[in-house]
Amino acid sequence: MITPILWSYDASPFTQRALRVLGMKNLDWGWVETPMVPPKDALVALTGGYRGTPVLQLGNAVYIDSQRIAVELESRFPQPGLFGASGRGVALMMVKWADAFFRTGLTISVQLHGAQWPEAFMTDRRHLFADFDWENALRDSTHARAQFRAHAALLEAQLSDGRLFLCGNTPGLADAHAHPFVWMALAYFPEVACQLFAGFERLQAWNERVGALGEGKRTPIPPADALAIARATESAEQSWVDPNDPQALRAGERIVVAPEDTRRGEVIGELVRLDAGEIVVRRSDPACGDVFVHFPRMGYRVSRAAA
Image 1 (cartoon, one colour):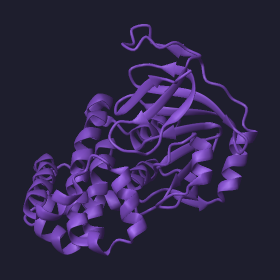
Image 2 (cartoon, helix red, strand yellow):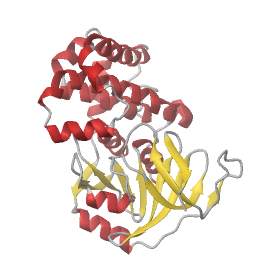
Image 3 (cartoon, helix red, strand yellow):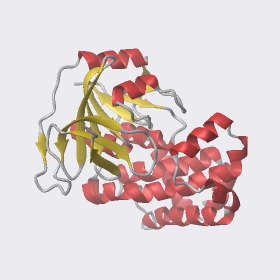
């Protein structure tokens, strides 16, 4: 069995999402700590240009985005299951809701702490979140707080029948989607968070239960060692492209894959697999050899590479 390796940094709420999944499955895993801002040379060598985190490595297979990471861990380590009563579809539908929840928390963080952020960090985040209205975020303080509380109220309502977790009495992917943004609030603006969570006793108890699931067993490893593992792995992906795909792409074409909502970087490679759920490209780098980079289809733009 290949040991999962997570490339990440702990301050990221999206890393926290992956950690909750690892904790639910109680896995042993290797950890490569990545910087919060570029340069991220080792990570970019592995992915081919994507600099976001978390990224999961399993041998020479690389998984981008916490939603794709969760699906792969469920496939390789099916017990305990992540989908439960919610089903796979509903659990993955929550990705976009969770992104909206995050944006309200980001706005509050900018309002409270943006002026104290180092210039290099602020410059990088302005580039990363190009669609975020940074100036308006500093002016419109009450709206973001109202929206954050509205999102939190949905969690409270879901727990109102006494269930322990969002989709029943066992934890699942829905909890991993939602928990990081409650964690984010309590970590980065605790006084405001206490006000926004006022009256939500079920949410607060749920937050403690999810946090108590832990993160499995983490073992730090150097980036060079993780790249060497990829280089030493000999495996291939089965080639297949959905004949009903609207873009009419073909296996073997050179394509570009990039996130729709941020500037986390684009990846160029040979299309190996494409269906309604994922995109897989093959690429090579001297540091890691041939790797297969997996993206979720939802939220990622695919186009043909220029000749």
